[in-house]
Length: 446
Image (cartoon, one colour):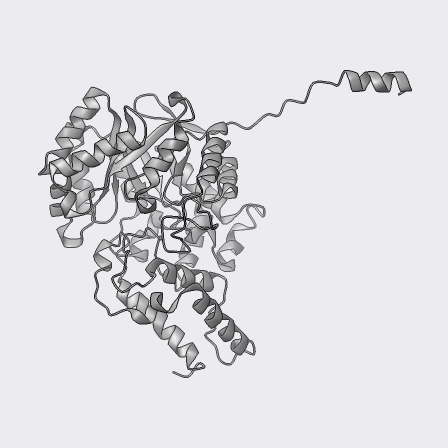
């Protein structure tokens, strides 16, 4: 290139290359909506101190980082994510307002919003209180209609699950009211989310001919598919739930694809089975591919605190590469390996909180699970590294939990357990952590 052509090129640069962004996989809803396979779960907003707002498992009471949330919502919409899930119960009660403010900057046709009738407290079971919760959701979300509205977490309540279901939604006339709101167009799709008692799930499905559920939200991942009852006898295998919905052609919205984050940090024995199939795939990618591979799934929710999580999950579903038969079989074998670990099946939903004695229950269980996965539990005094591992574990424990939030404060009152969707005997598990810590403090002497 001579001098003249060089300067001519500077004066007339070529047009920038077109960057092709892979398209997000979508699924068709019951009314023809094109819904992104990845859904944004607004229950773990980032906080200004770099943590998240919903749970005590590494969570924080710091203010929500509103500019960062806005950037996350903007990124989602720019990359094809259009389903946003919230609840009056999420993020200290701030989730709906934060989401509504962030979404309001985008055209209404660019997004679908899902929220819930989260009337868990019996004081909110009256028709007036429940209706006020619904109308407050409309106001906080800055919308004249809710695209996907849910009866939140039916099946909870232990042996009283049916009584609780009727008290929250039937006896107070709320289900009838919501059906009229759907008929009027203020609700576009009506459904429910489920945890716990299979009899309540089947009872709700038996109402389908009258109610016509537009969608149902269930917990589904590659462990719960066949082994939910092994994780917890109160749980229902995801395969059973999915097939019951598929028989009725009811779209499924998926929660807990990572089993409360546990499937994002599986141990080496599990990864040993997965790496030969795809050495570059992360545990989270395996989990999201599994959840998205079922055709009746409408969207898969993820509570994504960090932008990096959103970017990885968007990539996984842009487009989805469904699992092969061999990959399904390999994940089933991996699930059996996963179940041999001494983990506590906590999903960090925070329903057990607050503890009346100040214990950080989800935080304790998360700390235990992380230490187990990372092989940081010093349980063999004959190990040459035992002394250093013991010292490090205790330092990490005491840094993570102030004295008034540690396991030793548990009185076994049991107020937490009835609220746990996973049916964990929380006092027993807290005592398990406490006994282990006390053993280490005694320098390994039983």
